[in-house]
Amino acid sequence: MRVKCALPLNTIKPLQGNVLAVYKLDDRRSTVWLEEYQSVTQVIKRFESLPLKQRFLAMLQIHPGQCEKRAHAKIKAMGLPVAVIQEMGWQHGKCYLTTPYIGPSLDIAIAKGDFELPVAKHKLARQLGKLTADLFKEQLFFRDLKISNILLSPEGELILIDAGSIRRVWQRSLPGCASRIFRLLNETAYRAFGTSPVCYVLSRTDRLRYATALLANLPDAISPAISASLGLTRK
Ligand SMILES: Nc1ncnc2c1ncn2[C@@H]1O[C@H](COP(=O)(O)OP(=O)(O)OP(=O)(O)O)[C@@H](O)[C@H]1O
Ligand SMILES: [Mg+2]
Image 1 (spheres, rainbow, N blue to C red):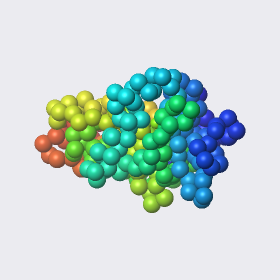
Image 2 (cartoon, helix red, strand yellow; image 1 turned 90 degrees about the vertical axis):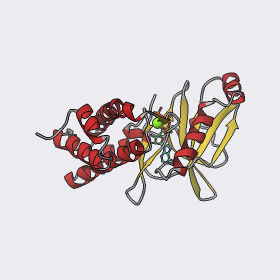
Image 3 (cartoon, rainbow, N blue to C red; image 1 turned 30 degrees about the horizontal axis):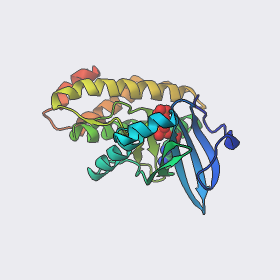
């Protein structure tokens, strides 16, 4: 169950401070909440699978929390915009990760109406295109690049989270990756805009803006194949 700011705050036992918001409650997968302690706000993501299973995976160094922490450190070192995982710890036998609170994820920001103005929506489409290109330039494929895994910083920058699944891929695989990412971003943005105050529908020009920014930021050698895979070339 995904809970968007519906705040069943007392169902969460904080690490050490007060729970300010609950972003996700899923008994089998993960619980994510915002906590404040001594005026520092951080987001805690706790993995909810059985403690015994979690210990076993951690022993093998393949716990999803460990994978996420490693992947974030690696892509941060490449200069890509990703949240820094500050701490990995254990609560009631379950692994948790902490990140500083950065800003709302795009699904929340869209649902709040932050992108109602066409100019804001156009800027977002271009930023998403550039972000995808920045990953592709490093031959990185983030198969879970959905709207809820991208945060909007106070400076208006897009920051990745939940990037444990990022993988380096062959250059020849990038067109296939591009169409998967395009579909996922499109579907999740479409859903989020449907819940926004004005119930925007994403238009073909929004998608073209994304594709144009993506192609403009890619080396000439790969952009034609990626353009073809998106099926959006301007006529
Ligand atoms: N550092 C952060 N700052 C602000 N909000 C955050 C932060 N980290 C997580 N969130 C919020 O919590 C939500 C869930 O976080 P995250 O994606 O890491 O969990 P998840 O269990 O992998 O979720 P899902 O499986 O739905 O992708 C995000 O969509 C975002 O709204
Ligand atoms: Mg996520």
